[in-house]
Length: 104
Length: 463
Image (cartoon, rainbow over all chains, first blue to last red; front, side, top):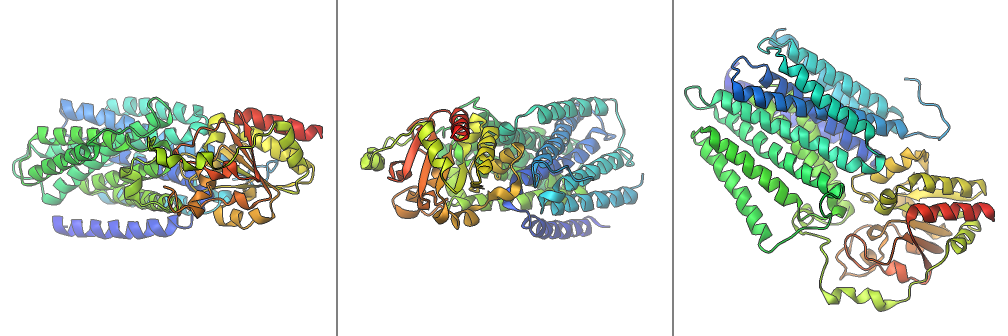
């Protein structure tokens, strides 16, 4: 694909993602807005993919090594911290205090 | 693995993320959703590691281990009351990672002959700029919430001008780079400028406005991640980043609406700075404050048939959520109906009170949102306001001169009686007078929220 064609395809995906995001997120109740924030927080940890691609690039030099290292570490903290915190929060939302957690 | 196969795996990740958000529409499925999201993330990471063109180096596991350990310990150890600053911190590191990716990409591409393609340049500039602002801005939000620095707005004369100048400077640097002057130091300077701007942009914002700031910074990191997707022609980054961008933007607007203030006003208004304006203190002398003892209030509660608890940031600070639930249990044992009225901006992040009460095992059907709660106050015997102030200020309804006029509030003043638990008569975070405190139907119970609530529970039990 030519560079322009790729760009157009990417922009298409971008715009559709915005609409999809608005659609899905507007269904989230106010009660779950903190887990929503922290859940989306974990999702933007996807930047770890970019960090890994940079850190694993073939054109390694000193600067890219250092920058890649720090980027991977930061993104990993984002991913792990984000999902664990969200899980901790969601664990607490129960219908009745005595109810056993859903067997999932 | 070939590019097409990897892209297919990324598609699985995208589907997982969308499902994760979809499952968040109900507390019953939300946890499962989060796990699906985590699964999607794991799959994407594995696919990236085996992607052709990515060399696994010894640094990768080391860096990942350091980051993960930090994330895991932070996430496990943090108290639920400190959740907003933790989310801010994780948000910041994500933004920082995006900015670093931009720096590395620019470094890798710029020395090659010829110019970087225009759209790639734009993407690099955007992720460097937005990612850096999100990084330093989130760190300041963290420091404010953790009370490492003052929560009150920090302002100085000419602040807006300086901020605007720094931001403009960044844009000019970006424009210079776009014209083809691809010197490394230009981008480093831009990143430095953006970092400075992030700090200066959050400093003047008051603690009570943090829900707006945190969701905005969340959107920023999402956008920065999406921009790195354009640098690397990677759809999973674009889609995931934009999902977060859309979510953060929506929450920001929602919070703004819940305070009846424009986002511009929240971000640039330095709202809640201590006003030296003597004219603003008119409400203070307008009535007398009635203070009561815990035993008086216990009697009121014990003979009520319906009690509504209105929690605010004060409950979080005192970490009183468990004691509040214990008090509710005592009241319910006496056959009294207890519900909780939750204002959308109570606390320091969207939905903050819901999470705290969930931690204390309060069943979520008892938590009522603004409209539902307001419909019930007229048949409520006692409203128990615990550490909330601005969200129950009747001036928002009645006094067009009040800075919060027009903000939807919880109408506790419509209940038969109101008890306000408060540390002292000091004004709330926004520094605004609250006529609720001098309302003849209101009594004040001064002291630490946790202690007071404990005394109330003991008092009711003894009756």
